[in-house]
Each structure stands twice: as structure tokens, then as C-alpha cells.
Image 1 (cartoon, one colour):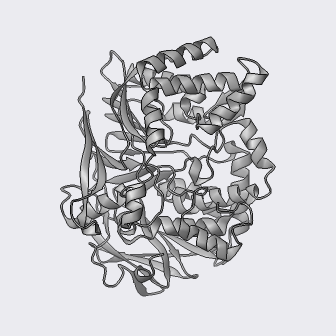
Image 2 (cartoon, helix red, strand yellow; image 1 turned 90 degrees about the horizontal axis):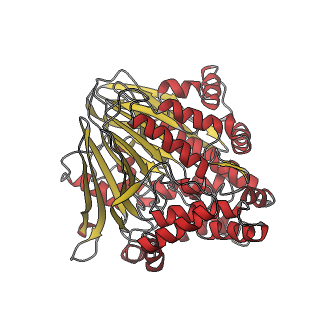
Amino acid sequence: MYKGDVDDDLVLGPLLRYVDETSAAIWVETRRQGQVTVRAAGREWTAATFAVHGHHYALVQADGLEPGSVQDYSVEIDGREVWPLPGSTLPPSRIATLRPGQQLRLAFGSCRVSLPHDEESNKEHGVDALRAYARHMASGDADKWPDLVLVLGDQVYADETSDEMREFIEKRRGLDDPPGTEIKDFEEYTHLYALAWMEPTNRWLLSTLQSAMIFDDHDIRDDWNTSAQWRREMARVPWWPARISGGLATYWIYQHLGNLSPANRAKDEIWAQIVSAQEAGEHRDWGDVLDAFATRADENPDSYQWSFVRDIGATRIVVVDSRSARVLKPDDRSILDEDEMMWLDQQLRGDFDHVLIGTSLPLLLAHGLHNFEAWSEAVACGAWGKRVAVAGEKIRRAVDLEHWAAFHEGFQRVATMVLELAGGKRGKPPGTITFLSGDVHHSYIAEVRLDAKTRIVQAVCSPIRNQLGRKDAAFLKLLGHGFLSRTTGFAARRSGVEPPVVEWDISQGPWFDNNLATLETDGRAMTMRWEAGTMGKGDGSDDDQRLEVVADFAIDPR
């Protein structure tokens, strides 16, 4: 942990979360119960903390702000200023409200391991692209800052822990206690988030850029909800109930709560209980309530929705949970259950310049990989007999064949919705429909072959920091080769898989750098840029880091 960069009362944060034209939400974790105050533009807003398993949190809603305004802010706990930290050389944290009808500048990416930023770690895992981006912003060299950073999963790795996390686990329960070096419960998750968000430069970035977030498998565990057999096996593991309840409860606190608008937050079942108790002067620990909620959300996904939508100017952003709400029966598989599918269907509407669909898992993969995944689903569900089905299950879990293509029925339904949107059946067609995704540890751009005014694009930015090894990268490149695409396509058809309802091409990529991508709208046009953090030719110090452009892509309206 960064002992010299903490305040005794402020454990973590502040994080700038949902911001609109007149309000902003600021999230913090505190050492003890208290009153948290945010000061900006000569005004102040205060919220009481709430407790969960002995940890204390607050979400302060700063309202009544001027649209399109920018103001520095500070944070106090019980009247004592705790942010900005004394002696910090980083710029002041700020709140930038949105303007009516504004264009959007959005940064996005996924897959970021929490490891040291020294020369050894940079050599093995690459430079943290988010941190390099933050340093670029803080230096004053950036001409514009994003309005929003969208993190598309694997913000924390509960199954692949760092040496520092393992030290915490060893002191708490020992590494021989199952699940060993993996995260076990709520308490260990809280430390994992601290490691992910405590580094000073990234902490500053999250305090000054509003963020939106969605989980992927490593936030819980690799292969999370890949198949019915996976769920059956995990249900027999003694430590799994504490893992899944701790993972979803902390996700609700640390990530999901700040995704919500003030109106939607007020409707949230847990938040409404907390606010009601605070208004009544009741102080209690909500650990048992959140544990029960998280267990129910896992066992009955239709009891809670993690997906969310928001409109900024003429852009609609739909962020889809493609992990927890899956249908996994061998004869009835879908990456989204019926409630989630109907919700997505309702959000995909025209009369926007752009529709962005954030989903941790790419809809459009390289053709060889797409066909391989569709084939694996078919054979694992018995298309080639029971004996091959056993091998198919092992293969899809061994090489992570779990994307939209491995849930073919759901892929076809969503692709059809998008074609309807592009074809004007859901209102005036947008200039672009863009899937923003991560997960696959390589970045690329794919585009649907379509004779329409709307361009349908898949933009993948992965990883932020978790580079693939050379062998894995070579394998992925191979799957994009025409011969393998045809071979896997033939195997998929022989397994009874219907051809996709859309056709697409890989326009750029793949590339395997640690990246952060930025998109910017301009009317019905859009530009995107991928940037990597690199070391210069100097001494290898922090000051020697550079932000290097990996790719540019322009989408002009037809």
C-alpha cells in the first residue's frame, strides 16, 4: 500500500461517479463512522457514512451545479479536510458538469491487474495504460480530458492475486486455507479494491474523471457462469458462498452504486433502506442485508439488474451485464436471460446520433475464434454425442470459449436487434452503432458489412494492464487466418450451428499493447484512438513514461 499517500480517516477515494448537467456523486471509504462533506464553488454538501461488515462508506450528492461548469473540490470528514492530500503535486480534483446537447469524449478499456509500477513489473506486465494516461492529463499536455471513463470488466482480479494481496491473505488466514491465494470473502475484497485504486496517480484520475463500470469474470472468478456444469461444480466448493456474496456485495458498493443516476439510485432496494435508516437516525451495519442480497442476486439473476443506460447529448450509452444473467441449461443457453434481453431490446432505440453498447465480452470476434466458440457450444451440448460433449466442455473452459459466439441464440437475437436499429425499424437510424468491449487481451476494430447509412462497429480495448504472452498472442493471430476461419466455420456448420445473421471484417488489429481507447463524437461522425503507455529511452523512471498512439480510426456518416 502507498503508506505515504494516505490519510488516517480517508481509506479510499474520492471517486467521481455519476455526473450530469447539474449534479455529481462523490464516493469515499472512511476509517470510521462520520459525516463526509464535499466543498466546491463556495458551497458544501454532506452525507453520513453507512457501515458494511465494519467498513464505512459515503456517497455525497453535490447538486444545484451549473451546467458545463468546472470547479475544484475538496473532501472533509467530520470537519477536517482529508482531500486533496497535503503535499500532493497532482492538480486539484475537479467536477466538470455536462452541457445540454454536448458532444461526447469517452475513454474505455478493460483488464487491469494491480501490481507495482517499478521497472521489473513494467518489463513483465507492461506499463499501466490508465496510469500513463493519468500522468499525461496531470502534466498539462492533454488538450482535452474525457467526460467519462468506462471500465469494461476485470477491474480487480479475485483469482490472480499480487504478492501484496497474498501477504494480506497470509497474515489473515494463511495461504493453505482454501481458496489459497485467491480472494475468499468480503474482507479480502475490500483490500483488493484498495490495492487497485490506491496508487496516487490512478487515484487522482478516478477523483477527477467520472467513471462507469461493469464486471467481468475475474472480478468474481475465471469462467464465471460459463456453463451449467461450472455452476454445479462451484456449488459444491465450501468457500464459494462467501466468495460470490463478497464479490457481488463489494461490487455493489465499490462499482455499481456510482453507476446509477440520482433517480435510479433512489429506486435501488438496498440504497433506499440505507437512506431511510439514516433519515430516522438509525446506525447499523448492513453486512447481513448485503450478503443476503448478493446471494439472492446470484441464485436468481432476475431479482436484480446490473445493466444500466444513460444518454449524454445525442449519444445513448447502454452497458450490458453479460455475466450474471445467463441461461445455462444445455438445451437452452443464452448470454442474457429473457428479462435482460427484453430490457436491452427496449434500450436499442433510434433518434440518437450514436448508440454505444458497452459489454465486457466482444460481440464480434475474429472469424476463426467466433466459429470455434460456436462449435464448442454445439458439441458441449451434445451435437456430436455424449463422449465428445465431455471433451467439448473441457475445451471451452480450458481456452475461455465463453463469449457471445458461445451463446449462439443470444448472439443472433442481439445482432438482429442491431440490424433493425440500423435499418430504421426502431426510429431514425443513428450514425453509428458501436460495441465497446474488452476481456480478450488484444485490441482490434471490426465492422459489419452493411448497405445502410448506419455503420456498425466493434471496438475492443484490452488490456489496460495484463499483456498476453507471445504464445497466446500467436494463437490468437492464427485464429484470424483465412484457412482456420474456413475450417472452424465448416466444423460449426457440421455441428448444426446456423450462420451468423451479420457478416463482418476486422478493419484494424489485432494489437497486443496495454491500451486505453478514447472515442469522440462530432455530429454523426466519430473518431477513436488507442494509446499505450511506454517507457522512453531514458532511465526507466516514472518521468520517462510516454503515451504513444497505437491506432486511429474515423467513422464518417454515409
